[in-house]
Length: 301
Length: 323
Image (cartoon, rainbow over all chains, first blue to last red; front, side):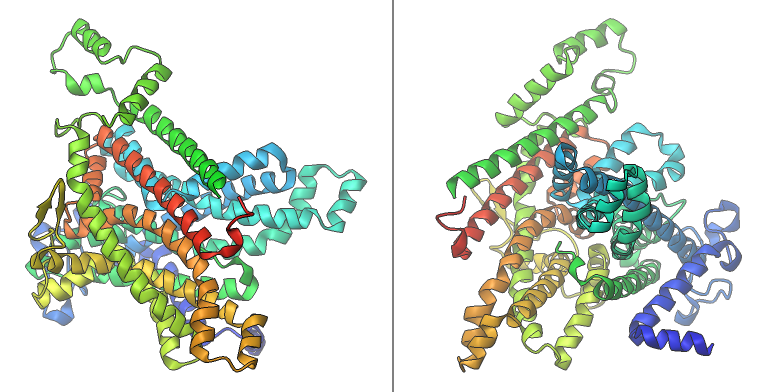
């Protein structure tokens, strides 16, 4: 315990960054353990009853002790729906980040290490994608998916399409960062030295370059997780993301939005608060990591 | 200067052509337009005749060529769902979106730049720190959540402002404007705020960090040492350099504002192009989707060129010799 405390002090983490990190960690843990923690399973139709719909939260005079945060229009326990929704949002956010990292790192390494025409092609494609707003590209991809895949199987393909749609835009940031760092690294003497020894490119890349650029990749990934979850929520809110039967936080807000004028505002508000605090916490941690480990990485866009 | 502009325009046009080609090919092979157009019991021969009439039996590049020449002439096809020319549908809705984006941009710049300057100059002040925190919250709140909260407070609870539509509009030529009526202005307040908030925080943070960078350069320290008046140093010497990146980003952001208007228009049922597009996505109305994307792409190209020109006007180093 003492060692841990002194380690914490030596890192000089500001209190609110630590709080944000703990909050995001706790929420992630709750989301991962959703099947054991959540009172009900909102994706299981037999676990809820239409007769329970639109019950107010307990502290607003709701009379049903089973539903702490009230219920939505289908009688689903809102607390459970939020926990499961956060789970879906986190899975898709993390999936998109992972996909973008792998794609962006691969292309960035190729572009930065080999240079020449392949570098030019990759970077032109990156420019084109960057000039297109995320939301438009994602809408385009999910629009095409909607036309290609059967609507009945939507819960199965929707997360994959969302991950693909968000990652297809976001890899550019990783590719640019990785390309720049790769160019810097491969010009250094130690890389030149192993090249002279005759080590194959594959080994130089994985043994010498990748470990040295991982720090900047991880920083970009943290900052990116927040925007990925934001995009997912936006798409789901627009009705082209997760379907109402498998709601993410964005879908829940979409459902709640339809009931707001009848005075039933909690269906939209509680998922919204969860979403914003999750993204905010991730942003706080990401900002701090960026300033601390790589101030030059300030994302301009 | 002129040469740079021409080559940049050429490049972006090429990009636009590539985007339209990808869009065309995907849309052409997603679903069968003939199947969507004929009666259910149409015979094979009837379908083939229609296919021939529409030119769908020709090679893809011929079809694409005809598509491009039609688009250049302003013919964007017919909406599968509404059976109306897509061009009319877009021109009807273009003013609504552009007015919303215009008001949002004015808000974002008009509030974002002064706040950014303030928090750079009074870097360690309490208000500047509060602004920094608020901006982080602003960046973490999705536009649709902002919209819902605004509706909840100002429309549902306080009943002060309308939550949907444009209010009364006035026809000026083919342009229908909501900016000439009181109800139009009342209607645009909430959507414009919800659209502007993200850009506002972005601009504020950008101006702040650029301004802090500039304020620590040697020429500013020298100017301070000389005892030049503070306002002169801040606004005449520093701001000019700090605003350069802000202008680029704002320019590019106007493009994404048009795209983000899709979200705001959905929340506030604002009858603009974005709402049309999202409806087209849900109903798989491909010709509307393609036309919208082409139009937005064109707007992007125009914005890029305008930003380039502005850049040259603001930065004397780029005049003359550059290009």
